[in-house]
Image (cartoon, rainbow, N blue to C red; front, side, top):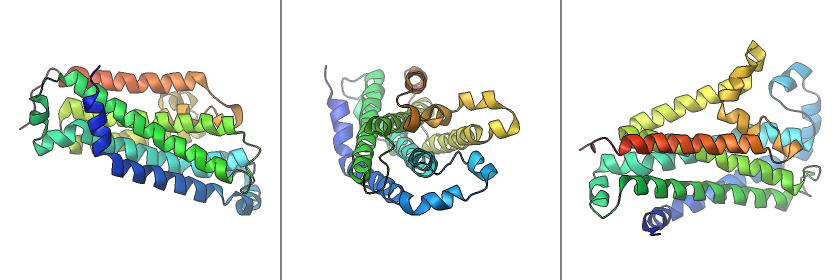
Length: 256
């Protein structure tokens, strides 16, 4: 199988990807390393506030709320949206897509191989986050969270980035406009996070299940390890988004 599109997209993205890997891992380490100084403050918070933020004074609770609950998923979503929007819509708006498709290359192969490159990048970022957290696990007093539990959460982090990357790529393949891609991805990201965070508080627990964020962290991998149903749902969601975008891309004219 010819993987030229996959390798070219990764090669063109290598500097940015290295920056994402190092930056995301550094942010994760920085926030995780503050656990020893923050755990007493966390325990003193009002119970209602701790419940609403899904936070407690344990290492798993702190990581879930402060590291994997907001900043890292936000970075994963931004990575996915930025990379996914560039994969098709960015080149289409710049006029480069016609030149790429002038080669003996189907539109389906273009989308699938660029999605595979995006997924590889998301996996590499999450792998480095896992290694970074393992490096400070003892010094940051995070030993109650096992390496396998950290890995489970990092796998879900990669899948969250892949889902939003698939959404951005799918929208770009369907419409060819970066403004549509970025606006749509941002709107769905905000709605998804809101549904996960506030569904229980407004008595709409079932609403949380439509949110990728719920399947990313709702099963508490930092306490319970790999949640295979959630992993399957995230992977299936990403696959469906790419499939829909590819189907539309194969049937429309390229914007000029």
